[in-house]
Length: 143
Image: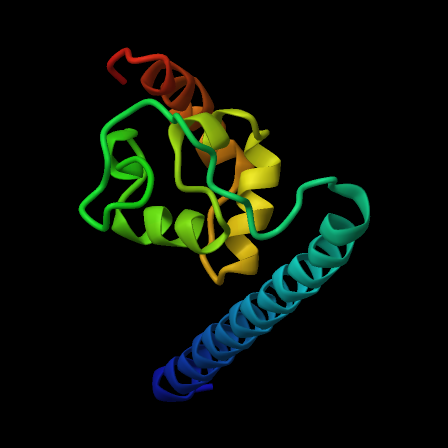
């Protein structure tokens, strides 16, 4: 066999391997996305049957903390890790005060935000300590 033939065979083998790897990666991405969608659907069903949280929440009177620019509730963006998007998702879920936020578990908050179309995990909420910061802010402390 000539060197040219060996080179062509090697290139074809390399190209086939690369194509197989790309197809495998795309399939993995598709299946992972499908699992996340199914998990969100299942957690939504579980949320409504397992959680005893009335939706939407009734704002409580006499809540501590500073008011946000919209005049209703606390400025949730004062909590490190909560930006405008997370704050809006929390408001849409009926959580407008530090006190309300501090009474939930990270997994409950993540599920409530998923219902609002905002993706976040309970682990991320734990890592940023949203609950602890909210408790400190609701009692008049700094985050």
